[in-house]
Length: 58
Image (tube, rainbow, N blue to C red; front, side, top):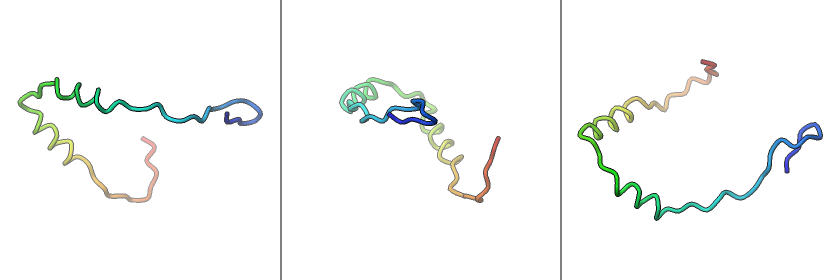
């Protein structure tokens, strides 16, 4: 238990175990639409690794 000012603010515990087999099965059962590849390419192009060191509050 994590406290702040004498009050409980969080609990620290191990993460639940994942089920990779269930996720793989779910993804295999999905069908992709014709625009999927274009959507992925557009998403990748919109990501930048540039950092300007300022805090953006918007």
